Image 1 (tube, helix red, strand yellow):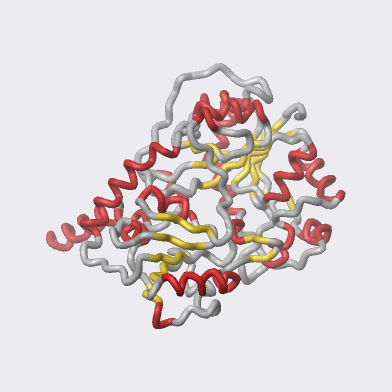
Image 2 (cartoon, rainbow, N blue to C red):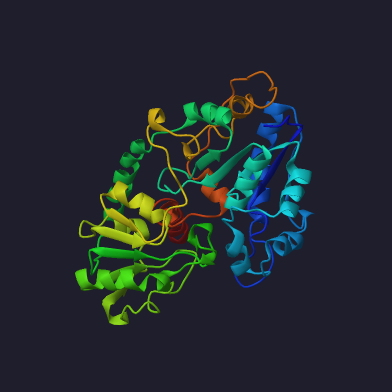
Length: 373
C-alpha cells in the first residue's frame, strides 16, 4: 500500500438516476464527507476532501472507456467489471494515488481497481439490519491491517435478535388487525440498486419467472410488499403471477415479519431477506445479498463486511483504523454518543422503521395539540 498524503471521501460516483443521466450519489457522498470530515481530520491531521460526479470528476470519459451508454443500464453493464480499462486505472491513479479512500457504497469495479493499484479503502454501507435503535454501517476494506484494526469494533450479528423481538412486540400494538393471506411474502425493491446487477444488467422479478412458477405450485397465494421508496409490482405480474393470487400489502414490512402465520420471505437481494431470520422466518435470495457479513469476531475473514454499530463518529475510532497506514494524533478518549434515530433522520431514510417508532410520538403530539386548540 502507498504512502498516504490526504484522504478522499467518495462513493459510486458514476451511478446515474433511473430515467436521466445525472448523478444519484452526490448527495450521499457529500453527506458522508460532512459526517466524517471533522473526526477524520482530527485523527489524521490530513485534509479530507470529497470527490463526486461533476464536483472534480467528469463521468463521460469513464463511460466511454468502458464502452457503455450514458444511462443506468450502461452503469450496470460495468458495475462489477473485473477488467478495468487502462485509461480508467490511470484516472484513478491521478485522483487517488496518494490518498486513502473512504467510500459510501463503492462500485465493485472501483474496489477491484483500487486494490490493483495498491490504494487502501474503507467502504461504508448502510447495514442491511435496520431495526436497531438507529441504522449503522457495514464496513469492508482491502487492507489486512485496517481489517485487523476494525475487528475490535465489530458487533456479532447474533446480538441483534433482542431488537427484533422488541419490534415484534411493538407490531402487536401497531397492527393488531393485520392478516396475511399467505405464509409467503415476496418483497420488491427500487429499480436501480447495486444489489440488482447480474451479468451486467439490472434485475427485477420478471427475470425469475421459473422460480416464481415453482413457488405458485407450493402456495395458493402470495403476499407482496413493494419497497417503501419504489412503488409498483417490480416485475411480479410480468413474470406470470396472476393478480388474483397476490395480496398487495400496504402494511409495514416489519409488522408483516412479526406475523406468526408468515413462514418464508422471498426476494432478489432485499435487506429484508437479511432481516427475516431475526423474526424466525426463512429467507430465499433469488439472486444474492451484496453483503458478506462476518459473524462472531473470531470467525471473521478478511474481505467480509464488519458490523459497526457505534463509535464511527469518534475521532479515536479513526485513530485506530488509520494507524496502520499513517501517523495519527494522540487519543482523546471522547465519545460522541448518538440518540436513537439520529442517522436515520440525518439521512432522511427510514425504511419503514419510523412507522413503528418515531411516528407514534409525532401522532401523540399532534393529537394533544389538536385537543388543546
